[in-house]
Image (tube, rainbow, N blue to C red; front, top):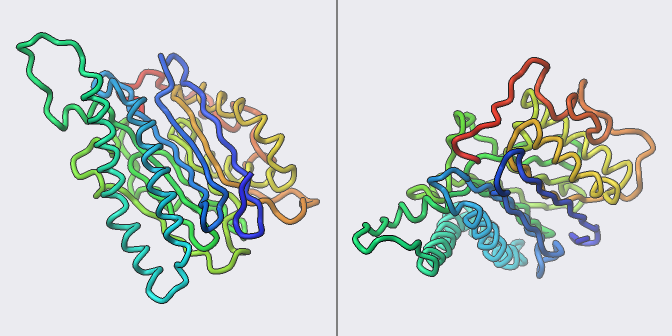
Amino acid sequence: MVTLGVRRWETLEGSVQGVGKRRNQDWHDCRGSGTGADPLVLAVADGHGSAVHARSALGARFAVDRFLALATAFGQAAHDCHEPGRLARLMTYARDDFPRALVHAWRQEALGHWDRNRPVVEEASREPGLEEKLVLYGTTLIGAVLTPWLFVAWQIGDGDLAVVEHDGTLLRPLAPAEEDLGDETESLCGREAWRSMRMHWAPLFEEARAPRLVVLSTDGLSKSFASGDGYTEFVLGLSGRLTEEGSAGISASLPDWLAQASRYSGDDTTLTAAVRPTDAPQEKPVETPEGAPEGAPTDARAVHGPAEGTDVDMERNTET
């Protein structure tokens, strides 16, 4: 349980291994209290998982760990962002310098691991090039930082950031203009990967206008639905049920919901979220678009599964 100003923040998190997968290639973490000195930081990463990315589970963990360290320092530096000119400088750093620093830190972590864990090969074998080594650790990443005055998020590759605003509006601010084709996606192992990182910048000038809910998830969740609307309805339903019931019961049910999603997508499925509780429970359910579940999902086929007759491709060359 964490705080932002005088309000409490609560966190939800869970991860399940994909059906038929040898191991979970996802990684996630969250830490901090949401204060100026101790910002709330959340991250999820999805290692690519195919043979060419043989160490991607480690790459995902390195990505989350390095993000949490850098984003915590960034959030602490934002404590005086109300000073003249400070906010503009922070935005420039977040847009230009933070992605470079993150990619550099991740590369150093991956290459350091390679040096300590070189495979046993014949003496005459060629030493892999720098980029070949990094490809072994390939991963996506979504991360966010919340302070009393600022909400910033970054993303490279697939997965989803969903934000339910103070007025109930749902945004997906980092969704790409065009969806990735098949299993192709941007990656931290790519050349000049920092150029592919997207940023969401949202100063919080009034505490009452802070988001109700911030959800970070790997693509195993959104791909479990028959259409993009299904994921939107899931997040709105989750927000509504959190408002009505609080987070304790939702947290207990989350592993089952993620397991249902994983059965339909065939992929590792991970979610971490920050919840800003309301002052008092609402007596009436929060309205959601037609076809959305009441609160959070209970029926896997209706909420998580593809439409009847839709085949799910359980074999993927690259597990992103």
